[in-house]
Image (cartoon, rainbow, N blue to C red; front, side, top):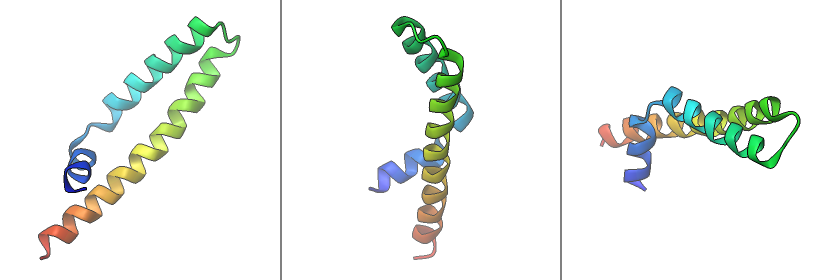
Length: 68
């Protein structure tokens, strides 16, 4: 669990979000979704929230480990 929290704490969220958006855009274009941009943007927003919560938990976990 410590390595997962360390990964979330060290990761660059903007690079991950850009990669997630590109991957979703390519997926929805390949599937022929008419509203591929909006769908990819919504999916990226969802994963962005998950990443930011993970970073918050990782920061809390790091602070908790340092206080021991």
